[in-house]
Amino acid sequence: MLSSMTADNPKRRMTAEGRREQILDVTHAIVDAEGFHAATPNRIAAQAGINRSLIYQMFGDPAGLFVALIDREAARAGAQFAEAISGLDAVADDQSLVVAFDGVLAAVDAQPATWRLFLFPPQGAPPELYARLAQSEAVVLQFFVRELRRTTPEVHDPEYTARILHAAGRELLRLHVSDPETATVERLRTFVRRLGSDVMSRSL
Image 1 (cartoon, rainbow, N blue to C red):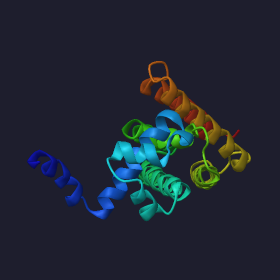
Image 2: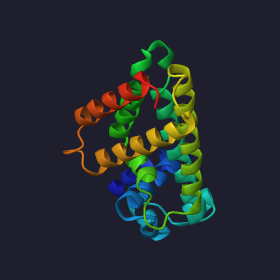
Image 3: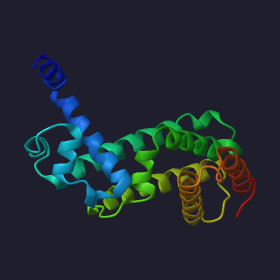
């Protein structure tokens, strides 16, 4: 009886915000491993050690839970990207893209599940995931255009160049996440250094 009460105490002490984060963490782990279709209320509740009614109380329904998860991870990735591109004014022009990529690569390695959600949208992903992905891609494209115009104003067609750089960067990150032993950090950095030097040193 005492052991049962002791085991229950952490649940009682957990704040509402802590419980919310726990549910999101459990949901994310299931989604990351098996897709959104596998994250049923019963399974989430069982793994979180809660009554499934709590999911409905906190998120309304499974759709609300998924949107909350997507918004949390989008905010995390967005903050990490913002940090990666901060301070580029103090970096040599031909190194700005390399430094930015290094920062994003470090973020991917620090929280791979967050980035997998957007680099490899899981099975059964709701439309909100693709909407957030489109928003984030627009932000990244704006960054590339702005950086190209700042560092290499003579570059031909910065908008299309930005799209090529964005597609290349996304593919490199996908390769790193899916096959880190082949797409090593050093290999990717070497490639991006050369690509960045080519782009920044001459007009395309």
